[in-house]
Amino acid sequence: MLLTVEVRATESDPNPPRVAVTYSDTAFASRAETAGVYRTFKIAARKVCGLDTANVVTLDEYIRAKECVNDALTDVVRRLNRPMLTSVHEASARKAG
Image 1 (cartoon, rainbow, N blue to C red):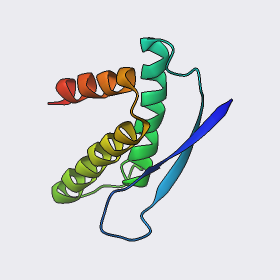
Image 2 (image 1 turned 180 degrees about the vertical axis):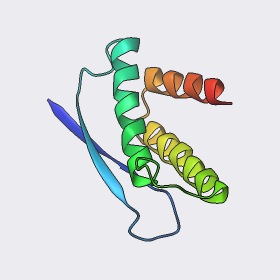
Image 3 (image 1 turned 120 degrees about the vertical axis):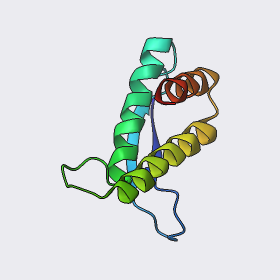
Image 4 (image 1 turned 90 degrees about the vertical axis):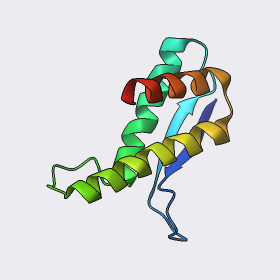
């Protein structure tokens, strides 16, 4: 069975940009598979937050976009509520910090 979740920018805009990510219901069977799904979510988050382009941005824009990516990933992880996905997300946050 295939499932879809929207990765969306969590801004005050009532219609924030969003990207649908489709994955199988067995995608969280192992840490490696979960990490693969998480990478897909991260790519989608970078896209909806404007970090997927080669455009030159100011430092302030970059910082806001990075915060948007982090917020979008936290939101999708919270909504899916999968322990292994939460673990992968927390490990990724520790590496980035």
